[in-house]
Image 1 (tube, rainbow, N blue to C red):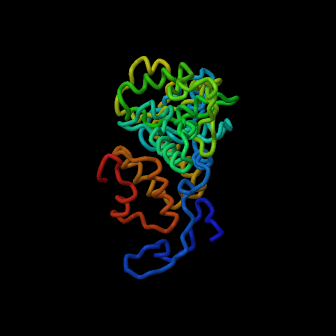
Image 2 (image 1 turned 30 degrees about the vertical axis):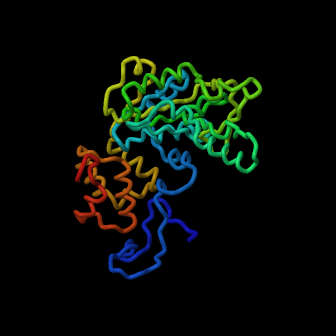
Image 3 (image 1 turned 90 degrees about the vertical axis):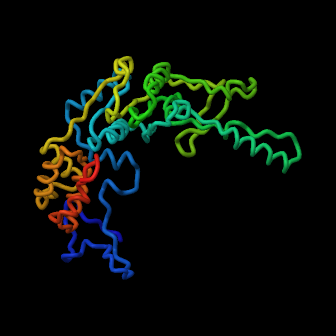
Length: 325
């Protein structure tokens, strides 16, 4: 398939033309329609940034964080665009792919800085000795990989964008520990710092596939503070000391006007023509925990010929994030 349906256009199909799966156990090989723009493979920054809708006030807050070299703490309900904002910043400022650290309850700052694969190195050393018969030790540089935070602190002419996603899910001490490293602008890799002088310069792996970074005497020191975007769903409060060192941006739930702008940006200006009832249903149920991407899903399916007036389909597409819808 080489052609794509223009944004907002409805494919020319029969009453059941949108059905690819029929549930009748008959094997077919249907032509798959184009995926939604936000569900296509390709550069993540291009996909998430190209259609992001942001207000002038929010732009000013982002610029304040960049000028001050302070982390931008972005809060808001799921689906308000917190993660996509980091990709938009990287895209507009041409700062390369976003370095992303997805935080969970088991996340440790040490792993986000670097990892040393001691077991892999030991295994490689034993294998080399068996094959060569001599006292061979595998070089350490291939077994040290900088994590997203560590890669963000690598010295470079232009900074990288570091996205720390859902920091509120981490350990209670993690926010202050993270900002301490970012404020200092450096960290030590003890396994490299202990090496003799003739091995003091090591070219280690980074979070960027195929890229390496030179580390001298085990110290990684940045020359430009990374552009740090920290997202939170407000599952818990952050320490006051942490909040004082951040520029804060709250992304509110979108208004009806903003929702129309988002739909037009993703699906074309005519997408809402056949989906006014979908928007009304979304707005009526929004207090139950719906996200903007759920509205996009529903409008996209309406354009594909799906009859969203059926209650079971409404529940399937516009289900509440907090539970059954």
